[in-house]
Length: 227
Image (cartoon, rainbow, N blue to C red):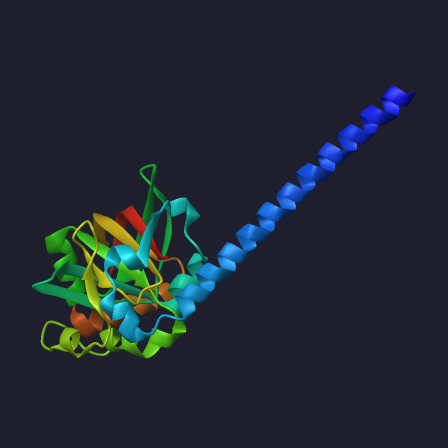
């Protein structure tokens, strides 16, 4: 009987010790997460500009991407950038999504056929999709007010352009960067839409540029988040 009581006491002590360790680890992890968040919020524009890409971002798996696509695309908006340091262009997109295509993580977006960024994307075959905090909302909306084909809007931006390790262009101020390899560009047709709203939209858009919208698919090759 005494042996059973002693054994029970030892097991209880071990379990209690394990719980304390787990709680301690969770507390440390929580503190680390809070410290990380705090570190992100204290960086000023000037501090961000002085740091390298590797100092600002870390690589993660696509499946571990933070946030949800409805917020990223619908609220935060997508800044699509293609090109190289000597010639690159960015645009803002509000329609798109993410998923699996050909057994690989992929993105898709719907763009007007006359977008200069789309032209550069087709030439380069790679591009980035970047997302920002609300602090930079006015900065990114500049990319949607002018065309880079006939203006110097890229020079007017206050954002700090930077190359990823793969050589694609993005911005230091981004909170999330998705690098893509162009997979397919397909043209929409009014006959393919089963909602009157969708059909009418592509018809009206065609009248403006005399070409139908393009749906762009890209394989996700890298994902970067702020450290």
